[in-house]
Image (cartoon, rainbow over all chains, first blue to last red):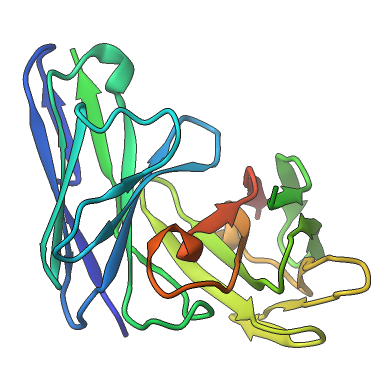
Length: 117
Length: 117
């Protein structure tokens, strides 16, 4: 089946530093990737939609300069949390779609637990 | 706007008990409906889906039927196991233009299920 690999699975960084999270589709080409953020005991909040070769579309309230998204190829999207602060600590999950059909399910990575100290 | 409402947990059951997790939705179009499962510390996995009214999705003993008349997609399992303990998310996805945010999933808040031996 379709596999999405997310790396790293967890990261601890100091306040003010930047962290990059990678999302790769291992056995399919992902035309669209999505980045979600999940707070403890809450649902997933869509942060942005990433289309290969174009600028990401950010959801309302998400700072595009803070959460940099790059989708340079059909198998890789990256999320960079710039100048991280403790309030950025969260669980970040990416997902990818391998067809253009809206009823095709998304395949999720295992998530990245970010802790900013 | 589009939304998903699912029963709040936590739900605690004994092994072999019957499970129902209610899910209702509000959508402006004709959505596809999904149930995702999240095991502790992991990303989401697709459990089952239904793409049109009266479709029944099923997987691993779980079932859900797309009821357009009641805008519902309740998840059921006849006999739960300890290994079913996880958070379950109901989600919808609308048709629209290819790519972009029209493909995004709208999630319910999730229901934590704990199955005791």
